[in-house]
Image 1 (spheres, rainbow, N blue to C red):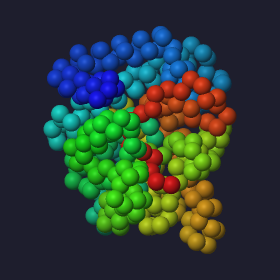
Image 2 (image 1 turned 45 degrees about the horizontal axis):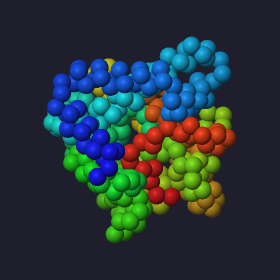
Image 3 (image 1 turned 45 degrees about the vertical axis):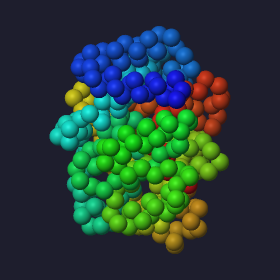
Image 4 (image 1 turned 180 degrees about the horizontal axis):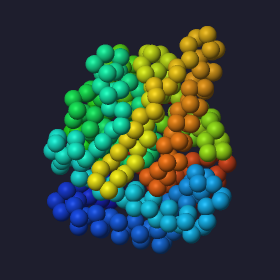
Length: 310
């Protein structure tokens, strides 16, 4: 067990044991220190938010936005550490979804739903809320190093009622399992705002080129399940989300599969951009985001659900 894993274990234990106001103040103070220090992750967040808000926003206002963004990111971690200790009623009251009736109808009809998410707000609270509501939910998670840390995050999300699949190394390919779960009526949320690997689909995003995962589009195209784009943000008393969609899924007459994946992924990118633009301070993107950005100054990766199989 290395220091990183020990740090997460301490976080889960200590943060759950202390009163929330005390923990919240400590995490906010940590965020403010990170803002003053201006390290690599903070610099990357600043560059990414500048793309979102455009060149017209004065530097002082951008600096305030970055500070609020780091506080939002710290709040995500605080709430993630405390989430396993919450009761079902606390999970349900701590998250609100505009458009919940859409998912309820999809699950009741047995057609399932694909939900494309940004790295924003609190996606763990969103998944826990879906599970606490009684709907089946399956997602994927990238393998983290060390393996012990990955297993702890896996157990954490499973304890919230989510079925978690590894992106690789499982008994069956994750994509095949997700197809089965959708056809059985499950909700499949996938983080969808970043995949700079060669497998990613190139899209236009806030005036620049980036790549996003093909998984959400492929799942919708293969199953006919409705595809939504979620916006996630924070309010003072709760994590919030809203759904846009279902998106129009092109049929075979629209062209070859790869062309349909590209067009649908661009629609996802447009929907994600609209939500991020409404709540830029809650977009936790401390990593390189656009293809024309330098590779230096990367922020720490989020140990999160993965963006899904390509």
